[in-house]
Length: 269
Image (cartoon, rainbow, N blue to C red; front, top):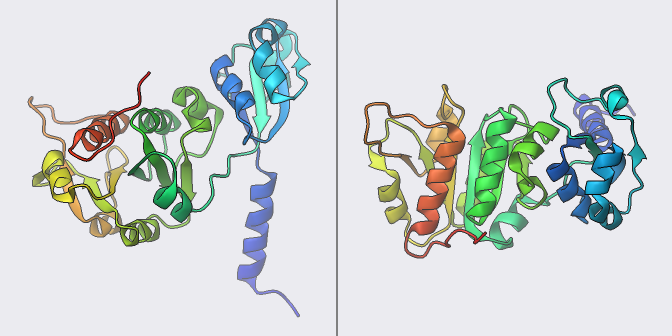
C-alpha cells in the first residue's frame, strides 16, 4: 500500500532534522558547547593557539580536536567569510529542549517566556536569548519556519546563553500561544500603537505567568498573533523617536516583568 503524501513529507522532514548539524565558532561559543553535557558534539577544529586556550573545555567535552594551520582554517571549516572564529569551530547537533508543556509549565526559571513572531535576524535572537537567561525566563519560543535557526552567528551573539536558555521552535506560534494560555499564561503583545503601557499590562496580569510576544522590526506582530494575545501593550517613550530594536525591547520588557510585584528578579552576575 502506497504511503500518503503527508506521511512521506513527515518522514522526509524527520530524516532531514536528524541529519542537521550546526557549526559553532569563536572561543566563547565553542567553550560553552564543549562544557554542555547535553550537546551532541561531532567535530572539533582548532588552531594550536585556540587549543591551548580551550584545554580545560576540551578535557570536559571528551572530543579530540583536529589541529589546523591558521592559514588553512577557512578552507577546512565551512563558515561564512565574515565569521570571527578565533581559530575555533565545533560541529554539533541542534539542542533538543523537549516539549513546550514540560519546559514552560515546570521548567527552571520564573514562569516567564518570550515569543518571537518571525524574528529572523540571528544577532537579534542571540541577544534576546542572552537577556532571557539574565532575567531568568523559562524559554524563548519561535516558529520553526520564518525564524532564526540555531547557527554559529546566533550562538556567538548569545555569548553562551544558547547552551543554557531553552530556545523552542514550534510548528505553529498561535497554537503554542493557546497552549500557554491553557497553562495559565497571560500573553502580552508589544505594539507601539497600543493603548495600554507595558506596566499597565503587567499590573493586570498580577502574579500570573506572562508571555511577552514580540514581532519582527518593520512588520511587527502578524494579525493572527495580535488576535491571540490577551492584550497589546507599548513601551512608553520620553522622546519623539519612539522605537527600539526588538532585542532591546525584549530586554526592557523582561526587566519590567521581573521587577513587578511577584516577579522574579534578574540573575546575579
